Image (tube, rainbow, N blue to C red; front, side, top):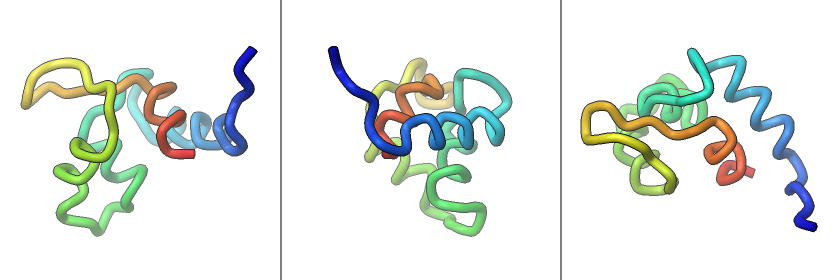
Amino acid sequence: MAREKDGYRDALERIRSQAAGELVTVAEAARIVYGPDDTRGRRKVCQQFTGWIGGDHGKRIPATALARQIC
């Protein structure tokens, strides 16, 4: 059975507290990962992380998938 990576639960809690729901938008993911002052964060987060659902303007990623890739 696979073991969770160290920091997974902490990352998931941080995402859930800062996002509006279980599906995280591109803007929310960029703010969580790169901080509020990074202007290129939206483009970088789309390129760096996989598992996005939806089209160009409505992309969302499950909180669990984002947390798994952050840690």
